[in-house]
Length: 392
Image (cartoon, rainbow, N blue to C red; front, top):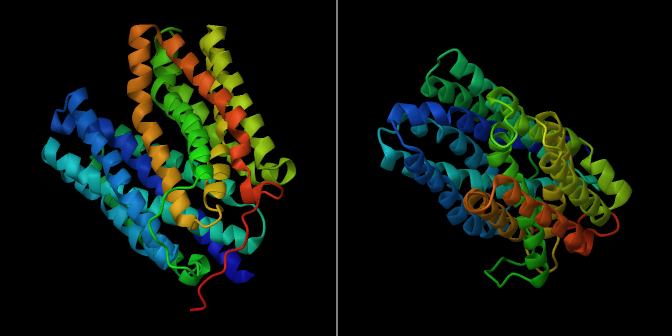
């Protein structure tokens, strides 16, 4: 039991570190943009490199983790992910930055799949839902990384020393916690993995996850713009829009495992989708910045448990290796974050930002309708079925 407790701490630390690395980079994007004198369009091209890198690495990582277990990918991938922060600060031009971001995104996607697969293995061993708590640690890590990056920017510290410090801390922590992870055999199935056509249930889960993550991306990209623009809330108030969303999501993820046990994954998904839709509706119809801040926070609380539930279900599909199912769903998540900005932007240009975000309310209501897709092997207890590991 002590080994399982140690592994639980190690996985939580991995999620926190992964979020912190992302938060650090996101908080220093303006500084890198100014250093290279990039236009908004050029920055968009560079940032697409990270998404492309993740999308390329995810299927391969799913197969690799299914074949060898998730431990090795975490032990190798997390320090590499940390080190790949450094080239982002050293890039001399747009092309180099795009290549560096491709590598950064590929490492991020690889660790993402592995840590979720390992978290699912710890959850099985512990015989209780844990994934929501792990994702809460990712959220808090992102907030911590963004806060440290913001402080560095306020102190006029260049990105390079900021990134070197974060990479050093995360790299050392990864080596320390690596010894506490479960052995590779813990999530390595008896049958060797093979590339296969995704089952229909994964497609249903993918649609559900896409709807929820599209909404999450919309809140990240457009909450501040909506409060500052149509609601005339000012830049300072507008910045609180996504902050409230992210903080509410992090806090309510801490309760997600308990609620999964109490209500079950289907009921929790339905209630979460309805809550998120109600929160965004409040933000859109109230017409005042204060109510919009409350609405986006409620939206974040409603979406908090969606990703952990969907990942658990994807990693529990019959005849599909857990890592392969998680990799498929993670690919959908990155696609949602890739498509949300231009889709909402195009609709806002054609109509209005309020009308464009109303489409997101419809997607959140679709989450309610698609909630049975979160069933499968985890329907009654919220737990994945046990996995028969390799004997060696």
